Length: 254
Image (cartoon, rainbow, N blue to C red; front, side, top):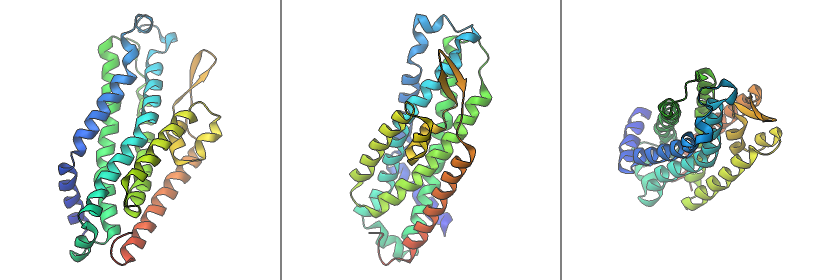
């Protein structure tokens, strides 16, 4: 049953131009994060490991991602769920044997794959932009890969939250507003003490930053493993419990 629901969600995502939206976001993040690659001051350090050209580029990606990823997740979840509210999709799906919770799980699978591919493409393209610009220092692939993996996990956790919110609240501007506020919190968490990043889910976009400033240099950093694992586990558990409750409810999720 879940396989059929996933197939239906794939068709819906194509109609909603989800792929186009993600491509626009990837292009925007790569362009903004790589903007400094063409300045003379930055190019002067392309062959000097002490100048940390790759680390500076990665930190730019962290900042731009914290600014845009919460909004992208909110928009994707809202668009994918709004079609059910507008077209009485919950009721029709119930008649076809799919409960609201099953639909939400299917949406999470489809959008999760899309977000994973989007996140991977963003990192690969930014690495390619650095190489194309002429950085000759060896890139820290392990560091970049770890950040990309953590970013995928945080995106998926926030996706679960926004799918539930979009299903419970018919007006999708609420979810978008939450995403905008989350983006502000994610960006400011990069400037606040480390513990502040763990207070709200959106702060994890800052918590997973692989770099931090120490004087005039960038030093390697990272999230507290058990806090990140607790957050991801809680998000997955609560989402599955919420989906089960939606399946047991009468009619639509509202």
